[in-house]
Image 1 (cartoon, rainbow, N blue to C red):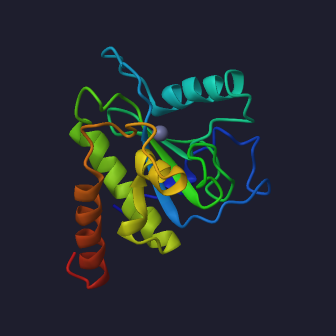
Image 2 (tube, rainbow, N blue to C red):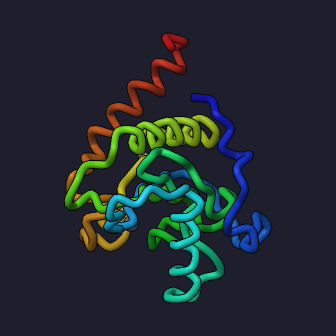
Length: 179
Ligand SMILES: [Zn+2]
């Protein structure tokens, strides 16, 4: 649970922490909308794919996400947590963007991937003092920013309200020393 993700290498290293700053007050969850076709690849491989797409197609300086989680539950780091992200309009300078590899409009996230997301969110919540109520899906960030849902991200099958309740209970149990 207290694994130190901060020791993992930064893929978007060229976009360093001294660039445009990020003050994380929200966690924004995404899915990559990728048909993984049964491929089993390291998280850094997937992050490399998104890095190339974000540079080439979007013209960004690096991958837009701060974290990528493979279907097997492995983590790769994109941008520095303190560097502004490029993943959710209106939230990029005040959030950490986490991307689950897969398409959860058509299938559920694998349990190992979900448990890594959960542990990573709890770690980030603790480190930045973020409440479970500020852990949102990209579609919810769209509603808060645009007043309407523009995508299904992180997938129609992902229930963010249920996830927030789970995180709130777990965070409370940690705080009170129950676990
Ligand atoms: Zn998204």
